[in-house]
Structure formats: C-alpha cells, structure tokens
Image (cartoon, rainbow, N blue to C red):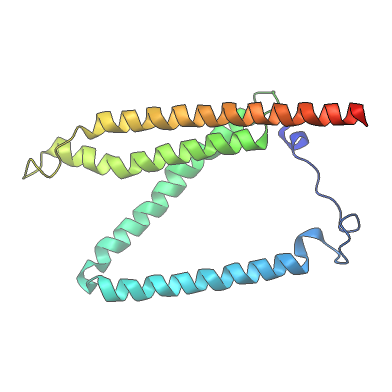
Length: 179
C-alpha cells in the first residue's frame, strides 16, 4: 500500500458546504494566511529592532556568518536527513501512518539540532580551552546520552500513538457492528 493511500481524501468544496471553487482558497484560509503574514512581518520587525538595540554593529559580521551557517546546516544536513528518512520509510512497502512518520521526523530533527548545538563545544573542548572551567564536561558523552533519550522518547511516542490508534479503530469497528 502506498503512503498516499494512508492519507484520507480531502472532501470537495461541494461536500463541505463551501461555496468557493477550491477547498484550499476559502475565506477562512485566506484570512488565516493574511494573519500569518502580518504576524510574520511584525516578528521580523521586532527582531530587527531588538538586533539594532542589543547587538553592537561590530558584531553584525559574526551574526551574518552564524545565520549563513544555520541556513547551510538546515539545507545540507537537517532537511536531507529528514527527507531521506521519510523516503526510506515510505519505501518499506508497509503501511506507516503519517502521524508515526511525523513523530519520527520530529525525533530526528531534535537530535540533529542538539548535535548542531553541541558540536562546537566538542570542537572547542578538543582544541583545549584557555580556562578549564569554561568547558568542564564531556560533551560527546552527553550528546550520546541526549540522542539515546531522544530515541527512547520517540519510540515511546510511536508506541503510544500506535496503541491509541488501534484502540480508536477497534471502537469504530464495534460501533459499526452495533449500528
């Protein structure tokens, strides 16, 4: 069974009572998009204001390098890893619910982001800090423990979701039989 067959069909606009020609461009969707655009622009403005008020102009270069690095890390590491896992899971030939796939992807993203945050500390510790109290921990081991926690919590979330989904489906079958 393909992944697309596990996703429920979206009702047509005539079935949902909408008078619009397309279910994705109804008035509510347009209003939600407009609100999100306005909030996004406001947050960008707030970020720019906070930047100019709190960061010295001499530090803008370092900030720009960090932002470029974040984009590269996302596009070169996080997005391909998540997309690759989704592709591999989709090709297993078994029916995997979109919710389970989303849970696994969230776990992967959390682990990758943790790794990206901790790797600079691991590198700095390997180079040897000028002050031993600045980087006092074994960050590699702590990153391994963090990954273990993410994997365990992700597995527990998948199991919980699967159990709940099976119970829901069993209740629906019983309700159909009783009706």
